[in-house]
Amino acid sequence: MLDLKGVRKSFGAIEALKGIDLAVTRQELVFIIGPSGSGKSTLLRCCNRLEEPTAGRVIIDGVDILSPRVDINEMRRHIGMVFQSFNLYPHLTALGNVTLALRRVLKLPRNEANERGRAALDGVGLAERADAWPNELSGGQQQRVAIARALALQPKVMLFDEPTSALDPELVGGVLDVMRRMRETGMTMLVVSHEMGFAREAADRVLFMDEGEVVEEGAPARIFESPEHARTREFLRRVTGP
Image (cartoon, rainbow, N blue to C red; front, side, top):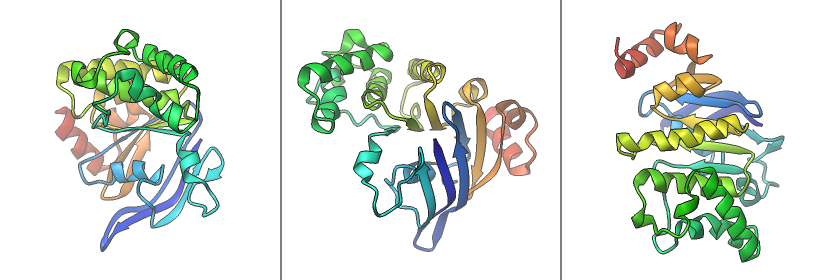
């Protein structure tokens, strides 16, 4: 579903990504961990060309999205992305935020857009808050609206960039529950997060990145219980304790 081949990204003299190869199969949940500044978010943003890779290929469901012949806006309809900030429009209700792209991008009639939008909100447990304004919602609820907004477009793959980092600890669980349900329904997901317990429990595969490289990857049990590389062991010791 998602195939990265030799992806590099430089910001001036700084090489943020140093030739990343990564294949995410259909319905797989791949979790990326690593210290701040290791290139995790840059890698995610290269997957939908929010950042333009300096070199390499990014293939989504067989289509190289770096090809000059590709309509990137069309391709982005198939690549859902959820950021650490919710980016909701304050002047639109929860339903209005979810249906905006359905009406403006997909050109769906309002009734059809609302039907799909309500179904997406129901999927994240917020059907009863469809008419609420963003300032009436908790941070966790706002993030779930942002997830519903992405899911309403029926993407082929979902990218999550630190989706819980801006939330108070007591609000994290609701967002992770939504991600668990997405996992159970077979959504292909690439997740950058510091939620190590969730990674251990839900991921099919965990990648550890440092200094723009994939240092190590494997099943969660192996990465968390018997990492091979000293850099991985040191990182996990710092974030999970002895």
